[in-house]
Image (cartoon, rainbow, N blue to C red; front, side, top):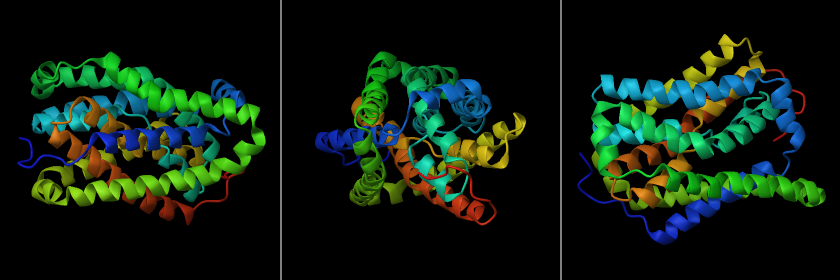
Length: 303
């Protein structure tokens, strides 16, 4: 069942959201080098654990749990979409606050963002179809994974490549710009999400009883899956915490961009992704502050 009132979100707002996401990805990638990707190949345990948790375990478990709990199709599909998104750039900041391994976090964000170009639309279509409750809806909305792939490439992969090129050819600019860009785009996104939530507060309050527990539970699942994956491959504490943050802090902004572009009438899905965007910051900051009190500084941990 969709909310009685429609979500208030304009085409202009969608453009702004996509620009913010692209700028955040650009800022993160300014200090990335080919060596970061070669490090992943030399020491693949942490990225492999993160990718397994991010793109296999989390969407699969979300599909099974929403089916088992008989979650309303539109809300279940929103949860599957969020689970199909890569880790958000906020995970790098949360990892830094937690005094965990930021180098691992940034490398994982880069790798998962590139992988998401293919895996986000694939997982969304696959697990939406595998869940019998959402299958009819996926068929009904005539999902085209190629269009989603194009959007993900434009807001994640292209800015990442451009950022790396800018960092390589203009290193002084990259060194000066990357930290301010992260802070500024973070604050702009906070303001954007806050304004969007404020405009739709009545719709959220009307449906809070349907979505709050689902989002909090799924976020706890994501954090738990990330931590378990790190434990299973024997990562040290700093790397394990980086993986946990990467999996638990989803790029729900990308989910919103996909929804407002292709499914603007799916208000239930939008509410799930929108509240995710707020809640994972609360849970991530809380966990980061707790961990920061019980961790030794990690070499090279600067954001």
